[in-house]
Length: 183
Image 1 (cartoon, rainbow, N blue to C red):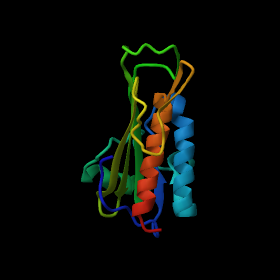
Image 2: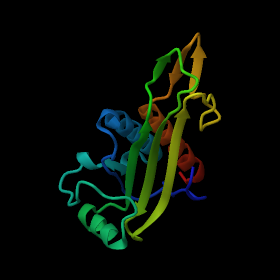
Image 3: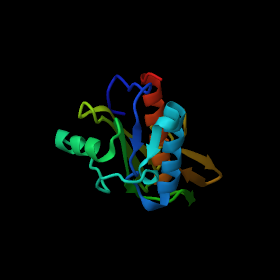
């Protein structure tokens, strides 16, 4: 997990959650988890980009935008803070369930989540976090100490697929953000 030491101040301002940049088959679940988390922190000061009429913004906001782009976001939305989440499956070498695992076979499933929050009034990024989830064949240790990435039951091995790794990585980002932020 790479990022910064401090979180954000959730106590004021109008917040806008952008459409998540993630694979189609996981978008609904990831969006639902994101809205749930930010509503817990912000209540009715959070809006989802598709629920707000009259916004003048491009469909895709790239990560790490420059101050000109942040000024355009402020002018086009009227919001104080903008939340941008991007996920991707970095590697998906094997399926979730394997029968009779070949000990010589290697591979891994890997997914990442990047969450950035921009202060549109100051025109700067105030929070950035990148979490990568990995599970590898033959490796019973996972990236997170609290979870095991695979369980062996009579020659059947269960692995976290890339979608589950993405969701786990998103939850890790939220845990970090909540721990470091003012509510």
